[in-house]
Length: 87
Image (tube, rainbow, N blue to C red; front, side, top):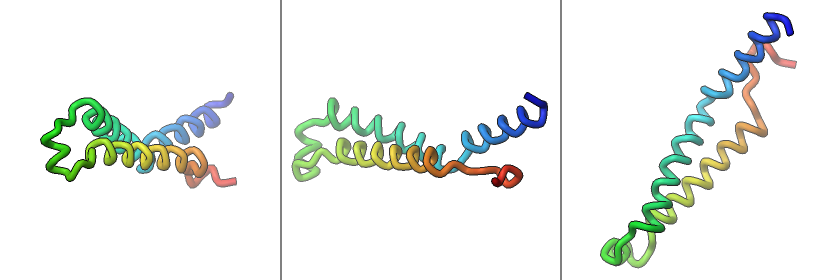
């Protein structure tokens, strides 16, 4: 592999790593996992009563995990192509 090809591959990997969709997916995934765990294991009856019987942390966490999965799928199906590598 030539130096130019190696540089192009590393540029492509870096552009995917710092793609805004990837950053958003990681943030949604981390916050979603935390909220899901909080909703499953650390919700008190008083908190449920305040929320009208709905486990808000659980449902918000699951929604955020679904959003994170959507962003990951989007990055995989439509990756960014750096301007110099267009086919």
